Image (cartoon, rainbow, N blue to C red; front, side, top):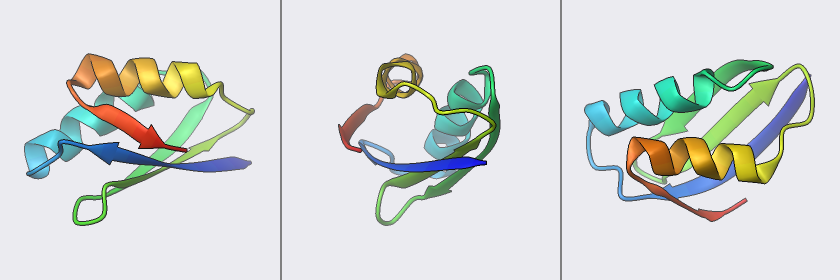
Length: 69
């Protein structure tokens, strides 16, 4: 298992969390997404190492921005 944590800005509610979780969850190899709304920390667990670009693209598709990884 591989785990990576990203900081996502712009999330303000549970709907935001759901959108980010859903988009990242569609990436091949992702087995889990844990979002901490107060801090903006998004921890992604996967079966393989994922590219930061794939995570950024998924977060942007949900309408938010990755500010740190």
